[in-house]
Length: 233
Image (cartoon, rainbow, N blue to C red; front, top):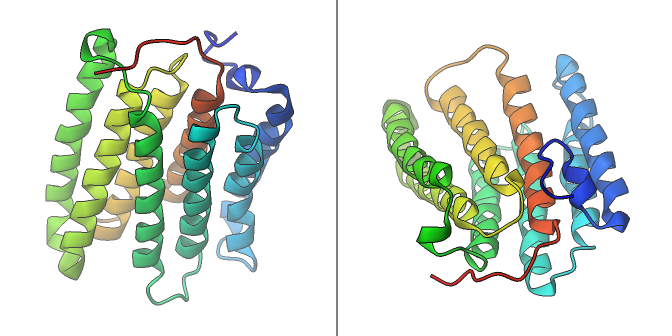
């Protein structure tokens, strides 16, 4: 059941599936609404993705993980709202802080179920190296345009890379969490590019679609039932 990468919802507990699908629909609807941005209540519309995933996460059957998954989604939702309010003077910095906490929550969740290095698939090991190289190169690219945000962005880039690394090390079924974490890093890298370097084609659509897919896959990867296994290091 969990081996089909293209059917992540099938791996979820039955009670959670409807909320996961509603979240997917909400994410697609928000993507379509980007044609008319900015608009009234945009922040609320953007919040539906994480809010519905939060309802799904409440059915996660591992209590010690459920709290971290819910925390990641709550702070992600807060970051979504803060970044969607252009009139908020410190919206970008506050959104950055909210997502930093979300990444830390995901990091703790994934680190708790990490595998021994020898049990990590080869492509995961390669991806970990690519993540850290890309993080360094991205930060160097952002440098001229960051101004006073150099230190906060450095912290964020490091924590984002830590989260992706932990997801790639995690002993979870399927590849959903690993791919979701990588999509998250690409989405965030594009946000940094548009903020500190310059615009990219279809940037709003690309950033949102990658982000929404990342959250959907992360939730599916964490909640998929798994066999007891050795995750010690």
